[in-house]
Image (cartoon, rainbow, N blue to C red):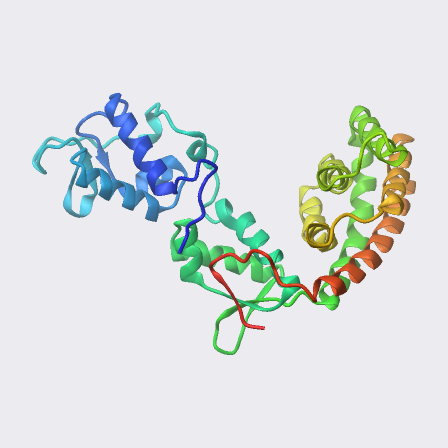
Length: 332
């Protein structure tokens, strides 16, 4: 089974191996330093499985030496060689971006968005069984991390267990879309009104000008352009709000954005003048400092976009997903 890989197409265990080897070679991990799997995983911001595999490879190459159940020691000496218990966080290691960008994140957070996206990209097309072991192999993470991710997806209502206790995703029904819309139209207009006093006028002017450029025809509407315009209103503008829990709750209800994106991918872009005018009206109120008016305009837009998304979901249901993650198996 192919594994999820960073941008340079190397699996994480190989990135870990190369990073450790480089730091040993330069002396930033001195000879005699004790390397416990858990401590190295914590320092590098990755899960234990790729670290264990990387350390095993380095041991096979003679770069480090196993210390029975205690882990490994830097150097090719015997187990009797003097070892040093060092706080790895106190060492100024040279780390690639793939490792350093993960520091401070909980293990489940590093793969949650990827798993969520894989599932959301499939469930409009049917019902899929999720393999816990498959996720672990694909992302090089432990079963504990996988279960953390799945429990959070379960809490979102995106997956469920069948009578045999198998995790199941889908199908994405019109009822799911209706329920998400009901929550969204209650929360998002209030969130935009709360964010309005804190919004940067330059950002608002730029977003409004970008909409005008597309409506006037000076900028062609592409999937990337439309994605940016959607993000300006439904992501960037909401970030100015002080209530981060509210912003997160709104994000969890924005399922119509997923349907619209999939529709553009499978069917292609359609005429979006109405959507752009709806966006423009919201930004016009925000530029005037009228939070209440922006909330009313946004509620109108959400209702109209829900009707579009509902029709598009019906069209998508006759297609098959083009790409399915290897840990998902279609069952209906």
